[in-house]
Amino acid sequence: MISLSLCMIVKNEEETLGRCLECIKDIVDEIVIVDTGSTDSTKAIALKYTDKIYDFEWCDDFSKARNYSFSKATKEYMMWLDADDVILEKDRAKLKKLKESLDKGTDIVMLKYDLNLDENGVPALSYYRERILKRKNDYKWKSPIHEVIELKGKLLYEDISITHQKEKHHDPKRNLRIFETMKKKNIQFDARQTFYYARELYYNGEYDNALYYFNKFLKDERGFIENKISACLDLYDLYININKEKEAIQALFNSFEYDIPRAEICCSIANYFFNKNKYEIAIYWYKEASEKVLDIYKGGFYIKDCYDFIPYMGMCVCYFKLGDLNKSNEYNKLAGKIKPNDKNYLNNIQFFETKGYK
Image: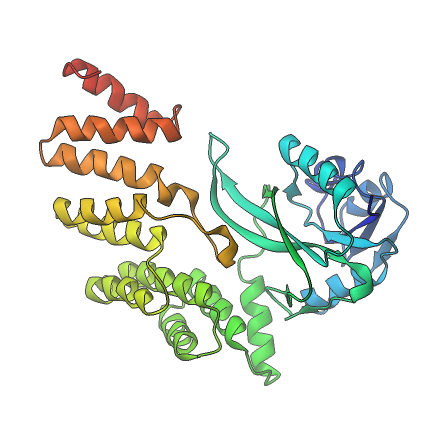
């Protein structure tokens, strides 16, 4: 069995820190908490679980803080969590088993990161992250914001999820301010930082600047393919927000330059044509989405619903609009197999029963 250090950086997390530590305390062998300036009871809560609590003066650099937390670890492997992360019971069991059986030749364990669970427990967005790392390899976080570790050595992908359950909204401009500070210091952005800077500009309503940096990123040959596909999706949403529909749909089609169309892209194209009442075209793209095979190992963001539930429900509505209740009912049933408790599916069942369908 491996030994495992949990390394966390925290600030004013009294609402969530205890919840996080409760779900991991009996799995890890050491808990390292680095506090970056809490003014609430965060440190008092941390003291209930560990005496390894360290202060770190915040300097607008997440990598430096995370690297400091790693420097305090003493076990064979290090695992990181944020205070508003939890590990659900099914994943706790898997993580315990992994700890007992992990081949010590493994350098990095990649675990899923699930965000925004719906009422059925299905995440709105998932992706793999470097989550457990061999300490002797001295891995270093890079980038002050949207920090990352370079993936070197033997990687293991596990079907174990860390679930992000945010309880409070952090300063929405924090990340953008860090990027702006980097610019003022004449720090040159790499391709990944350019992508995330464009996103932060978009999220904060600076559409013109966002467009500039998204396009700059897409022209950068060093950019990660999955980030380029995400950038095309972001550009689609951005153009829709500023009522530039032709540019919006073109942004989606531009993603074909980078790889075979993802289901997420197909669903967005389908939605575009659905909103124009072009239901036959929408059906084509929903069908394309439903036939895509999700490859979770490509390393990008993915929306599981785009591979089944969303296209099935989309085709249900499209066929209804076209007056084909038989096919509409058929696709509603397929959607129900994915989410049997979904309200739209259940409402549709009642409707079809009134029309004599079962």
